[in-house]
Length: 216
Image (cartoon, rainbow, N blue to C red; front, top):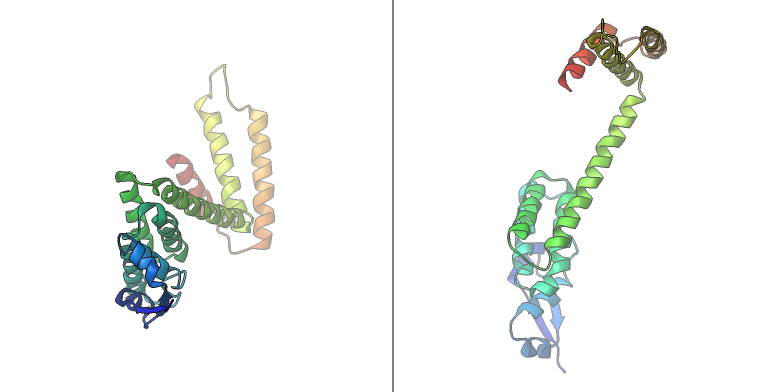
């Protein structure tokens, strides 16, 4: 059977250039709507409808153009495409794409559909990745001389607070001996850290630690 050569304006807006797609005419003739044809054309498009070097506005526009095409596909077929698009939006890191992905996921929560669970799962995965990234960054900072000074001061300030609030009571949280040991350990940590980074202002770090302790 002779192949039909299709060029879609929607594809042109997504890729920035005409993209020819070969389809069997019987596929469209047997379909009750154009959704299947659009779905098949999608498989001939780049998996990500924008490039990393595109501007934020270009990425946002191409995200929405792809979303419009995908929304014309029957729900059962659109599931993976919507989930993939949202995941790509989060993974890119662009603020406008993240906002657009958040909007799609919010709509999926409000409107029952086959891809609500998948969309939420994708978002949860991205949030888990972001939490790990932040935790890894904190762990790396904690190992620096500055991080060690701040954390040791913070822990000591917390123990000192526990000691002070029960001062004069028979029932105590922290004993004199435990507080003295904590003070000695803190001094040793700070001394070692300052020997590795003499630019550390210990008075400033102590004030920051006390302020942070009051904030908890």
